[in-house]
Amino acid sequence: MRFHDILEDIFSSKVKISVVKILFRYPEKKFSGRELARVVNASPSRVWEILNFLQRYGIIESARIGNTIAWNLNKSSIFSKELSKVFHLEKKMFRDLKHKITHLFKKRLFVKRVILFGSVAHGKESPESDIDLLIVVKKENDKKIARDIIQQLNPVFLSLYGNMISEIIYSEKEWLAKRNTPLAKNIESNGEVLFEREAA
Image (cartoon, rainbow, N blue to C red; front, side, top):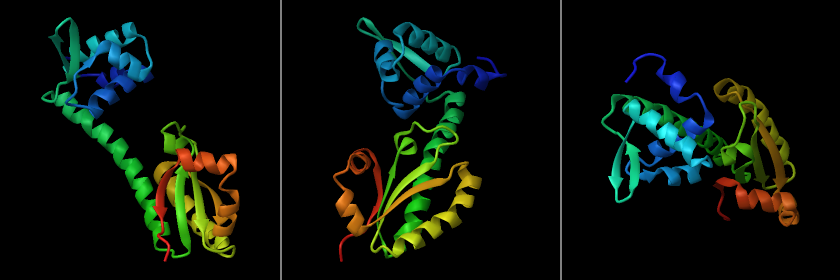
């Protein structure tokens, strides 16, 4: 294996990164090239090229199972061990983001529900994407308090993550009236509930 400019080679394309992510996400699983190609939505020939490239670095290993060559993470590779820290950090950052939001609103008794939606929730954000939140509060007057909290939080989030919160805030009464709108249905179906207070 090489010892210089390795990261430039591994992270040189989105398809390479996608293949590596899948292999690290399922370190015990053996994948065929065609299976990986379907998962990352790339051509089998391109994925085959990437797999051979990763094997040259010792990141993955292969074995013949019947008529198929199966690929899996080489967990004993020093490079695999170090790379796993990078992907762990990515997961940790997202967990940390959700924890901060949940902790902030959970202690405010007037907040009834917080849903993360949009590109960040779906893992399709750009570096400049907003963190989209739907916040349901008890009364109309509570909406201003929630907005003030977010205004105070946004400089912190901008410094930590490079992103700011973009909020939709409804009172419970408004939310009940709007739950059947296309936007509300989409948020409920595709968003992630970060916090929901049980009825007293």
